[in-house]
Length: 151
Image (tube, rainbow, N blue to C red; front, side, top):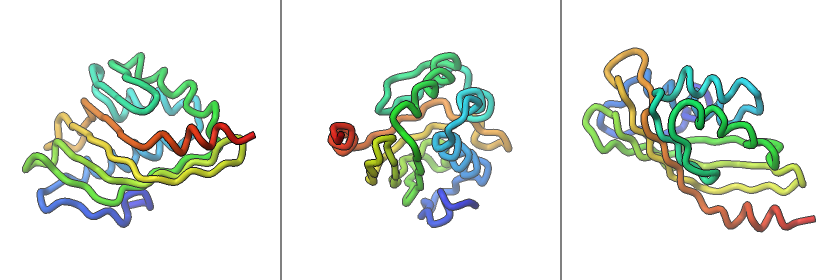
């Protein structure tokens, strides 16, 4: 596995390798400044009816999730997420709660680093091609607001 989940502490409940790989890919897309990232999210990561909730808003369905990435890099120069610990609410690993770390560098040069918590619910968890039907992230936006005020 690549660095985003290389040091992750996984739960004793089995989380299928395909789900682990999907999370790795998801966070790599979130950290990629590319016009294609939104399309890859809806093609490779989310179910067509998925809900994606972040500090940027609530996005439901493929079109909204795709478009959620359009302004994701307006203020950000660099972004990197890593997952520290994962908990499972189900024995099959289809409902996960994650604790992670995010590092952001804003276009004004300010660097922000902090923890976040996220929940991912998977469909088709027992296949080689699971998809996320629900994803919600929580993080402290205070440091971002303060960093944006720096001239």
